[in-house]
Length: 413
Ligand code: C5P
Picture 1 (cartoon, protein in one colour):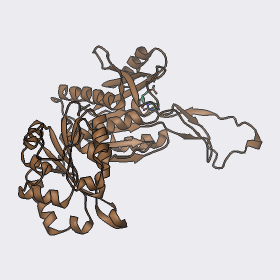
Picture 2 (cartoon, rainbow, N blue to C red):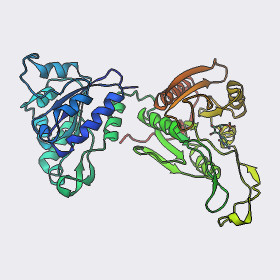
Picture 3 (spheres, rainbow, N blue to C red):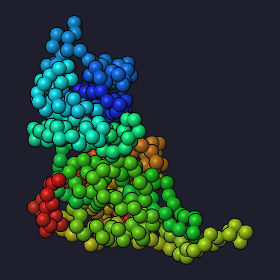
């Protein structure tokens, strides 16, 4: 986890969105960070100290003057890996932009060389006021990271721009700050979820895939700088910066992959694609009264094998092998047969592994290399291990021109 051991000062200033700081704090702690909470006097009108103290790694601090710690503002700022202000009110943004230190939070913001991320939250009129716009421009110019507010319901029932960014967006922005950008400029296509093959107008043949591992890989690649397309049968919240192509059947997934594969530098086929589909699909609901239907199946196209046959030079092709028996033999056979650079084998019969779990355990196989096992851990961490291996494969093939070399790099936004 990229936040493990990172010391984050979480500054909370006085807006109604202060309650969301609790969720942000909890998620940062869950992600391994050491969170030091600092509240302004205004924040205390909206949020009790006890709540934040209970969830953070240390009790809340509010005071510039405290008996046990003569100069907390310098200690907090000097030892931090990041100062995150969420919510950041117009007052705190203004004080920080003009270098005014009036309380522990604004002192800490000035007495640090650590990166600073501010997450503004205020009424639309305030957010659009020229003074606030100028202050935000100043902060951005100085290298401060700004997580823009969203449109939505504000205090008092008003609706407009200025609502604090969702906690998952803020935590994702923090994680990205600490994540190596070793896939910058690459195009990565990931598939996720299980395909659903129709029997009639309402019934499908499906499988147990939740799509969690594929989505975690798409997120990990995006966090590391890749432009990611996710071809998926399942949705997920918070897929910011990822192009999502929703599909349902193997045929639709194949069509989507044929469209985006040629320009991809990396393809990860994590989807559980049905191997068979009904040969005839009834366009109406089959009637129970007509008795059990004989469903004749036909094979689906093997999308990955097709991509292996058409693979441009330099492209990295990654497949998955979900097996209940002879895991490594089957995975090694598929690695060769489908012309893959890497196969991620998982024993879906083992406890906590594979379909629907939040955890997974895999073995990574590459042609000509010893298999490498990655023990039971969160699917996010498995995703990082897969991406680490892909990055290693890419650096080993940098001498051969990949698809990207033929394409003008897009400017970073
Ligand atoms: O041969 P098997 O289905 O076990 O191979 C698994 C790998 O092949 C996975 O990466 C899966 O996404 C892909 N696959 C495919 N098209 C199919 C079946 C599997 O691309 N019809």
